[in-house]
Length: 148
Image (cartoon, rainbow, N blue to C red; front, side, top):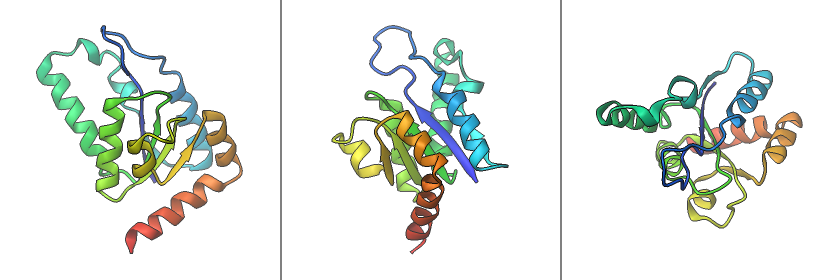
């Protein structure tokens, strides 16, 4: 199974700043434990210096990552607050019929509400549901429903 770890990077920062990215290692570790052999792509791992990229390279990376969201099996998106880049990534996954799992308290935000197959209000909720096996069952059910 192929996963893409989407999530807040710059958020609403006006300057050249990023939010903490430590959630990514936690997600990758626990997903690998529950989905052994999974291919988990973390865009931050390969592009942590992306804010310093020249425009052409930055655009290429941005567009490549958006396209990847339509090619993987599951996008797991962490957005504790609005994130324009993540909204585009989940849109691309949704348009391609991929499973979108959202970790976000923004349950009334239309991008979160209407593009997600499942919404978990907090990271703790997601981790608990993963441990209980509910996330794996949700992925399987959503994939089956999207094939119809």
